[in-house]
Image (tube, rainbow, N blue to C red; front, side, top):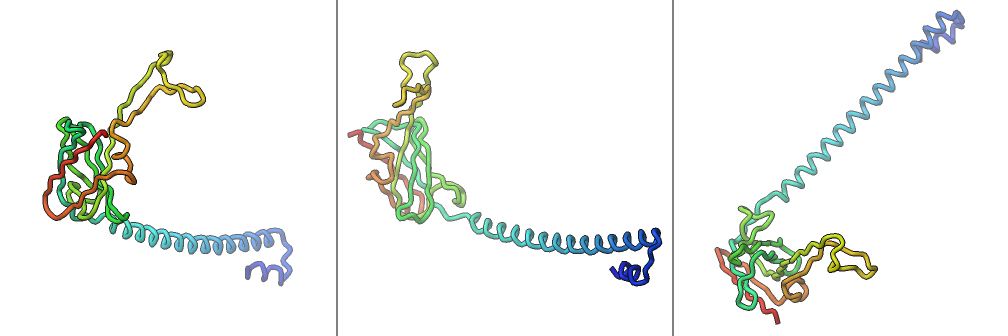
Length: 193
């Protein structure tokens, strides 16, 4: 900028001098622009670094392992072992963490939780228990037994819940359990009627 002012002040109209003055002017402006961009980039880097650290610290809080209590049991329906069933312990009052399990061929479940110290068991507290066992039926195209929706459009996969409806919804299930300290066994007896 000073070079341009000097050139204009002393009336250098020689084309080479004018070219020199203009080149110096644009170079000095580019340097200022580059300095400004560097400062802006440095501020963005610092801001990004702070944001990253904040997210990491917030994530570390969630990663803490909570003390869980081992819970297992057998699920039966009208006295018969209920295999291949998903069981969920839902915390009462919205506090705590849900725990779930899956019954094997012998109807035995073991609860696990996402943030548990060894991922086995459930946190201490009151729970409402829900269960689900779904039978999936697949139909082939052209099969006359293919079910249709209310618009008459066929669907080739049909799911049917095999557990009585009262036990599948958290609002209607009569099943409750209190998890306490220590290893525990909780058998669940369901009635179809």
